[in-house]
Image (cartoon, rainbow, N blue to C red; front, top):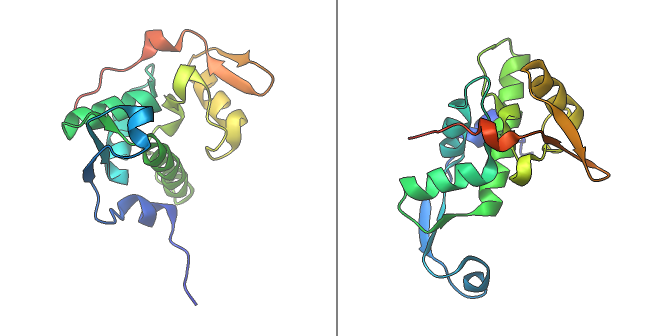
Length: 159
């Protein structure tokens, strides 16, 4: 029987990544012409770790940094989002094992400053962590919440 990988194992498993490919087929309509990179999970985690207290980032900002690192037109939005989740879950695994310096995943927001419902503990846990750091979280529509004036707090991150 196959045992399921832990989130930390998933974070450190690069599966042959990064991979740079030409944008082809129907993806040209969405992304335009050029190249796309599928980064390693640790690339995403490295950027998330660099967001200091009092600052934020978004998945799209992470994608821009990764695309620049690999000199591509874009970074894949789907895999980047998946790797953000893996990083968050791995950080919580480390925290539950007693480690206190974990990736501050709660500082990574979705586009528009929206909180991520897929993080450990859901929106409520992310909101509590952000408010504890002094950010104001406000409703956005019926189900979403966003950080007020989030764009003022975007960290300048370089790799």
